[in-house]
Length: 199
Length: 343
Image (cartoon, rainbow over all chains, first blue to last red; front, side, top):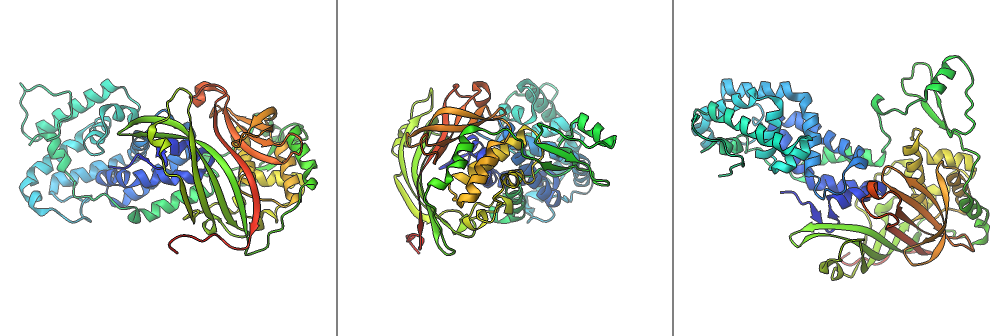
């Protein structure tokens, strides 16, 4: 988890200070760049991620005047900016997911060490999952991955995407249903939980 | 294993990078911080319609009260903005400019340090296991800055003072008990300010002594409009707080600052050391605060600065709240930097 509070105060304090001391904004980068970069890498792969993550902090720095200082934690704001920037890469993201679905080989993780034990056993599930993610409407994919990969709460996700809490709930529910179907465990009688389940 | 667990495992081998792996990204951000001039066509300064028409018709546009004239050069997509100093001037700064001769002049030499002793107050916000707290943290600081070179060659020693309450918030107990003295230690690990934002003595003493040219210096890289004026006003503060200008440049700076649009006079303003003075101020409507530079009411020596809430909704604090303040207590010259522990 990234630090959102330190000797220099929470993110809002740091951003407030950066309005008259721009150098202070580097602290926002130190706190959040590792998580944001990992998240973007997981969606787009290393090459695009480096650029998108860098652009995220440049855009955040330029928009810092409009940051709502009543929000102590800048994570939702930063993930929202990153999500916007990633939407330019939606075709590349889907294409790479389709490669996983078709071949089982993942261009996104190719440059990282494999955890082969899990890979082999879960090969079929991974391919179905990738196919289902590729088929999701963009808004559902953004919402689901902010919850599952970025670890944002539902209210934080709503804030990041600028949508209502109810929209986040229904998008997550619909997306989960589609994933469950794709994974072959679809039970038409099962009810869809409103809460994210972490096991 | 349900679909959320499957999803969490998918691509989970991608590691969380360390800050060392993100040098490239960090450098891009630091470069933007050092030179915040917006780039690209989307953010170029807008040319007022009337002016654009005038130029298109081949007329010479003379804007009597406008501080900025946009000039369209053939073939260039973005207009160059030439900043012409307006004639109107704020009184406190003009008086301060006239009276710079009355103070003894420091003449630091290369290799020496300028030593600034000041008192500061800044809002602090902490949100941790102990709860959500807001207070005004105060400290006394002594900063050594090299006569030539950036702040990475500087040193700082500071002493925490009792915090003050933020209106409507109790002071958290850990704020009162926070560590007292720190340093002397290195002031900064990086300083990538653009050349035109340098505030070391060697650089400041090479700045123009004519107010019109100093005015242009304050607007280096800026477009026109309230945001540019706010940034120019902010740069004035950067040259006053922990910086020392030779007399001629100081007078030029005060006259140039007096001409920035939107600058007004405040009859009574108190600095972080409790000294009451007169101030030149500029409201920053976007942030709902007014930035004030305070001067001694009889000698017109620079005392300090403060920011005061001028729009409760935008600043999210009661009208009139002082959010930040500082007081410059003493400026001296030293031959040596302080002894730093552990070196």
